[in-house]
Image 1 (tube, chains in turn green, red):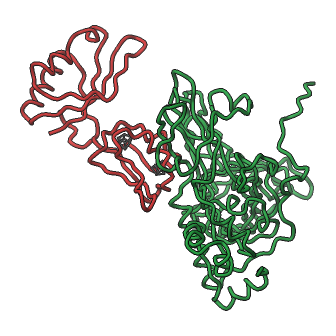
Image 2 (tube, rainbow over the protein chains, first blue to last red; image 1 turned 60 degrees about the vertical axis):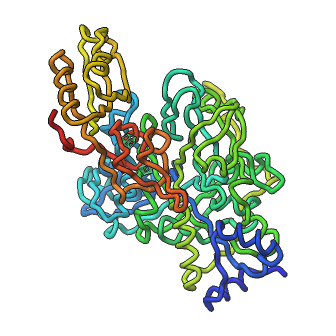
Image 3 (tube, chains in turn orange, purple; image 1 turned 90 degrees about the vertical axis):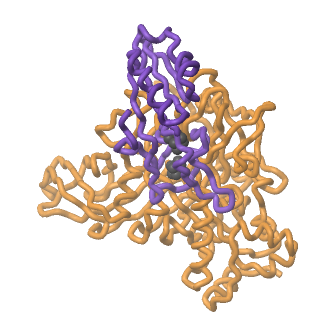
Length: 399
Length: 141
Ligand code: SF4
Ligand code: SF4
């Protein structure tokens, strides 16, 4: 018999909800079968922790006396976007500090950037704000340099346009000679190693492959605080080819998320420095999935052995958008530390922390069990398979 | 006893049979971890020497007497457990397996006894959780 969100929320309030993690669900379904599991389990919690470049924070600093309409601003030397109202700023995760030598001495180390500013704000550290304005009658001040602290800001919230990729590439380097330095890590020549980045069986969108329960308004674990899915993410691509179990054989779905930074915990949101590439932000996200019926029980029991990722050459095929994966490998193989490709054993490494993904799924499970965290019924689900939304190439029209 | 050392050979020394003599005459085990020739034809080598204390001392003396620059590398790196996210990005770069994933917990651990201070993990770590130890351990030759 199907359950409703309302029924499950009633159970949560009475501390009677049966909550398990996506990892635990695998063995429950194996032992008891889908039918019984669907009756017994109310919620499956998921988790993921890894670099998610399309991230950033909205900050409102409050006004100085006299007031300033900020037109350029830096936070600890990192440029923030100010083309919005007078003292609203957007600090993007991949903005590099202004004095960084970048890749001039290749490969650059990219020690500090927007992701690190966000982490330090959440750690409660003081940040130097330098800002300029051109001066108007209503906002006469032209410059300001001051320390700011998250506790004094009017608002600080995360607003990430694309997080939680449903599945992702496995990156290799087919070049014969040199290392390549990518957002997927340092790839040694001649396919000496392979980098991957997904929590696989614990990953939110892989446990709800057709977005039946994840949508606008879904309440989530966001970096240690409570957040929400606020839209489908940029490059959301629900029409990516799928396996029989609904699992896409590549990138596919994404979500845009938001949440109050003042609640967050730096254990689950960290600045990232990728040698030779740049800076970014690692996000920890967990999504609860209601087991409305047998189909959801089946979906949430997916295991690493049934999820396949495309192996992509980052020395040629990725930068040139050729879209030719060399092969597909399962997350079970990837997590074992070695994959076999073209008859060779290749060492793997991960950029996404399975250890933290587990911590997140466990924490969310505890929150729900304690009755503190109710499910948010989506107002709209994400665009699904068959929808018109696409993730295409740029229509290049040079002028 | 084991010493990890960093050797620098000037141009004139690059084609001399210094290492083979070292192995033959001084009875030390030599494990070459990394060797490069720079564009101006100087050589650098990162080696692990094994043998008893006296033999090692003689071996190092021989290298110094022949004009090889010998630097004792700090034997360890600093692993900041609090900054480590256990992502595992360093693991495929750590050839001796000093940084490794613990099977059950999927936590990344550091075994300093296996570390050869090659530093390959440092640029591979996105979270700056590993860095060179500031002072060398047993720094004198
Ligand atoms: S320096 Fe890093 S990569 Fe090299 S052996 Fe030690 S832990 Fe491993
Ligand atoms: S790359 Fe850095 S953060 Fe990741 S497991 Fe290794 S030491 Fe830890």
